[in-house]
Image (cartoon, rainbow, N blue to C red; front, side, top):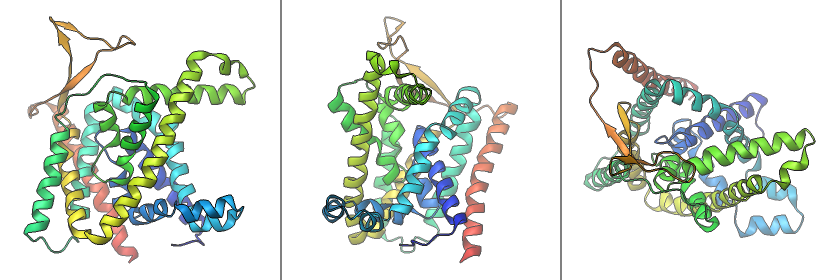
Length: 335
């Protein structure tokens, strides 16, 4: 893997990390798809696979430079640094647009995913019966996930650790949205909204010299939750990457066909025209322990084409497709 990168190449890698981090936070969108489209998916899996017994031996023996080179540290720092920074920057902007311009944001992502299906599928090659079957299986699983009913919030630390393992799958499995999986597990708001916001609040207070936040039991609870979630994510990244690296080596076309199927199936999750359906009992909305209505699922519908808002949404779908085609065009010019 490349070690001596120019400043511009490093900057582009950081930007790609920003994009992946932002995508990972949006339910229905996979950071793995971003890494696939931006062309660093294989290096990402390769680098995570290098976090193994040999790497830890180098670390414990004090050979830090060898450890850094062995795990492709420069690449990981730039990509993961961009992803983490995104949670406190780009993701907050996305949250704003999702609240105020939800239809257009989903339309944009819907278009990007359509473009991604073309981008990944165009050079696939041999669409034999086995690969077609793998595609259908991937699409069926992706579509099936979109109709599952979300669970309620659970802050048990063992469950939070498992959420970390499963939630990070969106970074390593293109088409599988880790954020949407967390919604299904009932912990999206707890882990990717409340805990991240509290962590940001704690860090800014500590930097300003206010250490009293560390005596607040509520803040400490969120700090424990985000720490365990991060540990689960790190464990999931490494373990899933090892499995993926093995299966990609042995069954490359089949796995890629399943990935394309996943991405196709995820269109059901990001379908722009939908309304949130909340759990009810005796015509009364059920609330979680924070007083928020509990999401049951989403009701999808065909848009009204006589409405100008629908055509604006279609315009954003076209922009999303165009963005991926532009990336493809400039990627081909570089070769």
